[in-house]
Amino acid sequence: MRPAPIAIFAYNRPEHLARAIRALKANDLARASELHIFSDGPKQPSAVRAVEEVREVASRVTGFAKLHVYEQAHNMGLATSVISGVTDLCQAYGRVIVLEDDLVVAPGFLTFMNQALERYERDSRVMQVSGYMFPVTKMREAGSTFFCRIPTSWGWATWQRAWTCLEQDSGKLLPRFTDHAVRHAFNVDGAYPYFDHLTLQAEGKMDVWGVRWYASMFLSEGLTLYPSRSLVQNIGMDGSGVHCGSSRAFDVVLSQEAGWQFPDRIEESVPAYDTIRTFLLGLRQPPPEGTWLEWASRFGAALNKVRQAVTLAAR
Image (cartoon, rainbow, N blue to C red; front, side):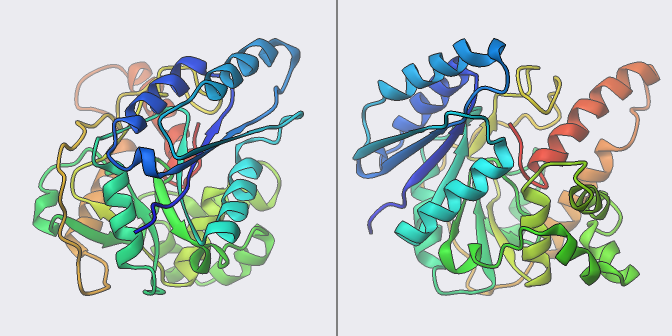
């Protein structure tokens, strides 16, 4: 098995990128994998130095089969960067593992991703593999791994045959959600306003790639494979990101597992879906104790991150 290429999308956080790469290098398959680092250009003059530091970190990376660094002269933004980078790598290699500069992975991350990519390469309904799993309990009831309709962007992978289903024009997607029942299902049975975000994207008021990917997957009846315990931790919800404030709502304990059982039946796990839906609903509810101001701050940060990551494009 030849490991899939790894893409890391970075902007202006050199320390986060260095931590992400250190964790990735601890994976057994790192030395056999090609690493592609996409460094976006600065949005404004004040970001120039941080972007230069990111590129210094990227240029010194060792421990992989090959290193490719792509430096953009101008700022593309995360959505355009991800779509362009994933498209290019899928066309060149047929598959890709995707990370961002604030994601720390478990030692078994690359093994899990590559095994899953190999296992479901020809199963058209499986459109994504997720390394991140929400911080919920009792997921073992769904098995070592399971399928769910909801994708994530915190350490994920896909194939060329699936990525070609991406419809980048939200205006073409919206007419397919006119039916109330379809919209309700797309919104995780009312747990999260994905359709509103798709509308905002179509109106040019929200520049994210993830909601378009989710909508494209949903309309294709695509599924995402998850591990029951997370192999990815997001360290960027510390106020340093472009799209989010501080939140610990998505913190996980990284899995130390080295082996997984993959489902033979390609179908969504109802218990897993219900558990994830409950988690998303919980983000919208104030705690039984505490002030509304404290809750609003926590929820606002979490909502921004979900909007970018669970839809799913965050940084």
